[in-house]
Length: 179
Image (cartoon, rainbow, N blue to C red; front, side):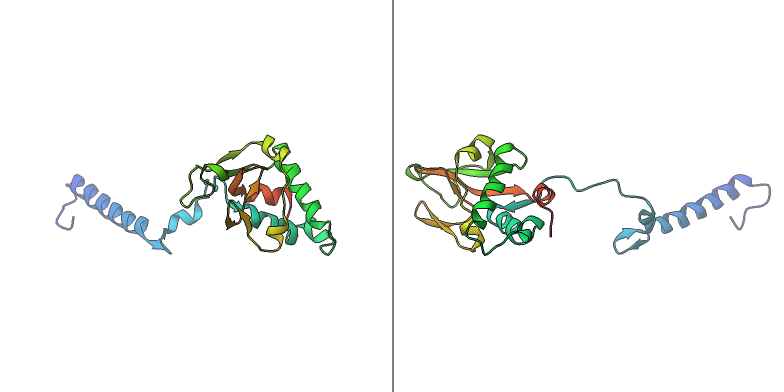
């Protein structure tokens, strides 16, 4: 470009264009904290998608000890666990809150590690028929199911039930806001 004369306009245009592209490429490649600097000014359109899981026992402790509902209750009352179980069971049985878990049958292998069954959605009809006992979770104690001490389980009578139960944390916090 320096050796180009005023008559060689193509050489001058190519020279300036290459300088412009080189500087632009350098500026575009500069990063701050691992992010290109110009992306800091572009609004992000991505939102977190999916379910954030919370175990059944952790969900029970959250409702009982951290939610506005739990803080408004008398935790010393012997019916506190019953009221909490009814509130949780109502949301699960109506379909307002979804749960996933693994099926177990004590006479057909029980609860194994690794598990025999996949974690699948638990239908609302299951929750209409069972009694949810939240005492175990509120007292940070595992319950004896199929000869093993486990958490996050709901026996459905007889020799079967669901274990390794998880809920949607975002939906749970929407139904029971933090206190």
